[in-house]
Length: 438
Ligand code: ZN
Image 1 (tube, rainbow, N blue to C red):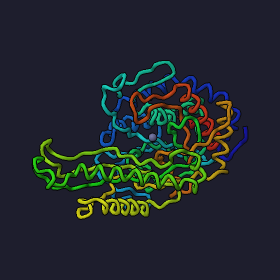
Image 2 (image 1 turned 30 degrees about the horizontal axis):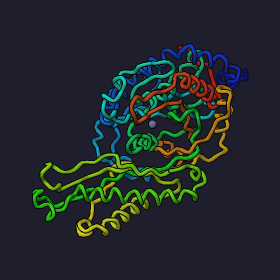
Image 3 (image 1 turned 180 degrees about the vertical axis):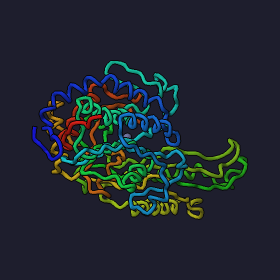
Image 4 (image 1 turned 120 degrees about the horizontal axis):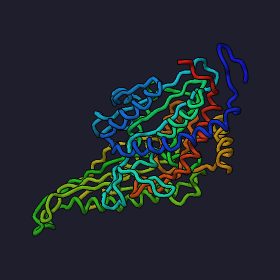
């Protein structure tokens, strides 16, 4: 134990075994807490009550808690802003702050997102998606993996340290943000509000790997207007659904061309299909016996790290305009393209940071195997830290299956290992000091 000015700085390695045991001791409570989070159907627009629950959980532990509604106008100036197309009435962020008695170590952000994606047809689940069930090593439920297990792990890693009468000797900010599944504006709003630290960890369900690089994501919506007539004289009309199908088929060429560029990106070159262009939603027409007058479909595409999102958006518009030029009706009635969500760039986690080295060491200690790198093909809020705050952001979290699908599940053993690694990381990165006397 070393003396530090004004108090003790305890050597974190001395406490490793006690911290690991403390995670075990709190683990049943941690999983119950995770289950409580899963019970909130916190799809976008309905996440406020889950955020209230987290607010109370943070506050009852003595953290200073900041809860605010995201106002798009506060972040619209930022280059990382994505266009907003839904109500932000329930777009609530919550951040818990720990301040040390004396800062000795380095500050840390523990980030997670509260929003979950829709369940799809509930009868295709083995159990109701918002009624968590444990079976063997797995906890089932929408959001169990993505990412309520991570939100709980962030908090319970700190609880394990607190249970020993210790606390981080540096500021720690525990963030529960929203809008991760559609814009990334939640994490961005937390940055714009002033939350910064020497490193960040996001406990997304990435199979106990470290995300080395991540694609960017753009959302766009294509509107096709037809010319309605009775089907009896269909040849005189213009079928908006047929025209939309033509454009959707053309987007397969777009996707193929984009993936043909992968050799320029070494971290993606070995992947079969790094850029996924997904038509995720479609609507159109009003009546089976009327030639449809309208069709609208929603698309998500990836982009390579280093690509400018706004340039890529223009390339999408150009591609669709050209494709429309080859169609008898669309050539004179071009589709309208709007951008209604993600306008987010990819990033690379630069190797060699102290934070990464520490995670590598602690992962090996807890798991007994080397930490693997992965290239992620799904959006991650880490881009906010990497691109706009020059903060090493480690995306590292538990094993899961079927996120965004049916019967989403997360591994309990994996959550336990991740929480242990995380608790040791906090201790080593921030340092430890005794809790103040009540
Ligand atoms: Zn996620």
